[in-house]
Image (cartoon, rainbow, N blue to C red; front, top):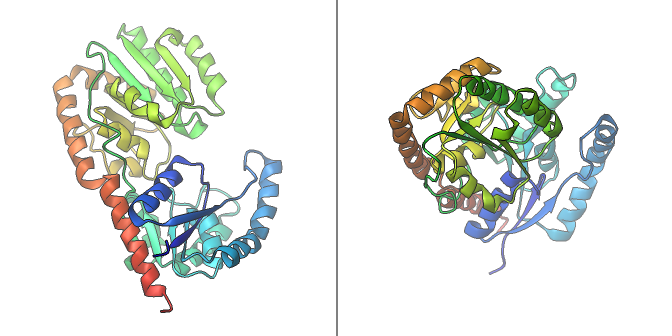
Length: 355
């Protein structure tokens, strides 16, 4: 029997997208074709070029559709690739909202246009993915038909992210796995650890990844006098991540906005106690001082206090990490969730099939 073909519209290099596509190949036996915008949106010049590319995109996508005859189109981001999927003319289509809302930045002058585009994509979609409950709030506000919404995270591979604790119990071994971009507020984390350092509390802080803030953050560690206790690993292969998480006892993430964070799930699966910002995207999974801790955005003094509390209450931490692992096994197992998603796609294709 011939494999069903899916056209994926989105940035195929992103870890989230790779998880999604690999799951569909593995559990749905789908063949995946990809298309994405080639121009990065790194500066104003590129953003203008990207707009031109976006305007011509539908002609390129229709050419691919004519040549490849996909059975379905799926797309990430309701305001860009999701809109292109809606224009493609293929049925069925599934679109995924990436953040708490894809209407971002919230004070953007293009917001009214983005709303129109998003509403069109929502109306045309046969299935809308909300990777977590936080995403449904903005969908309801946009009067989306909630019968079309599947609230389910893609999940993580629990056989890779194993619940092992190799951290030194005598000190805070903290890890940060988010990109080094301004919205992830690594500077707040460093300032909190400077307070710990002043108090004579021992720690090792590992910061993974790369991004625009790298040299600024390295300078800041020197200014704060903690450079010998902070390790910037740079970009690492995904295969090295579980081991680094297992060598840590606390996971920290301080973003100003959050959709559904697979980084948080990975930490929760591998015995890391989560300390994250007190925002809607994290409140879906973390309850303060129950299975982690919630910190006011940009409050490094509170982060320092809560780090000390977490470290001093090791029994609480040990109970919490066991609870978190069980929660993930029940709710965010990639092998279970991707099977559900793949089956749903087959169902949609069969329903829309002309035969």
